[in-house]
Length: 89
Image 1 (tube, rainbow, N blue to C red):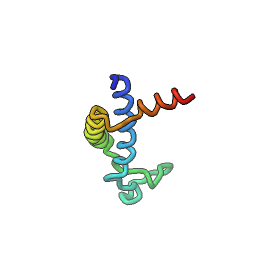
Image 2: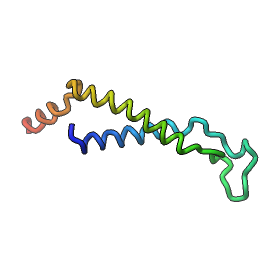
Image 3: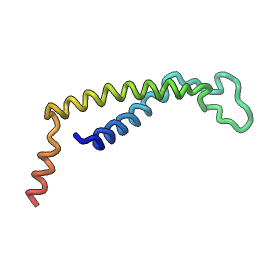
Image 4: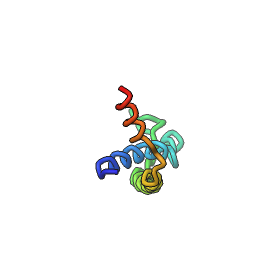
């Protein structure tokens, strides 16, 4: 797998994991009663984004390592499928 393809796969995994990690530990501002006029009461009181970015990066690294190993073992046959499709046409 090329460096560019590896980076693209890691970025996709990273964004998917980020959206899964975002809700953890989120407490609404309405629960803290520190809502000013014009603020959304459902917004997180303390989003802890740096923790979530670090956690996302570490989790994504694990998932990417598993994907990279599986791809190196030949568990994905996407190259053969594309070659068959091009020879059929």
